[in-house]
Image (cartoon, rainbow, N blue to C red; front, side, top):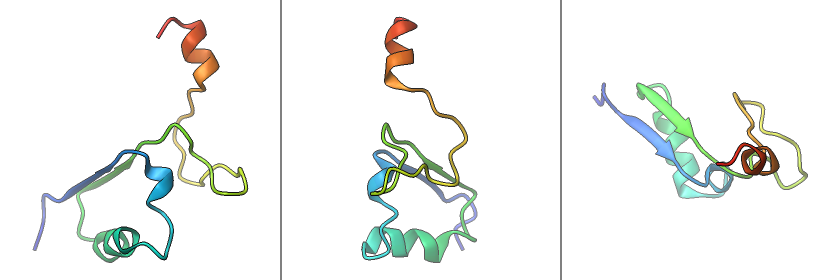
Amino acid sequence: SLPDLIAINDEAHHVHDEDLEWARTLMSLRNEMRLWLDFSATPTDHDGTFFSWIVSDYPLPQAVEDGI
């Protein structure tokens, strides 16, 4: 039992390939996790389509314009 398990993935566009052991591990634990967060500066698949679970997109040009 892992009631406090949290997964935080940086560069998450790399972790959702079904051939990767990490992706299979995450999927096997998804119902056990309290929280699963993915972060990526490239929130698209190999075809350029945004992942369906995107909550927010803050493009680099906008960040530059905002002085971040």
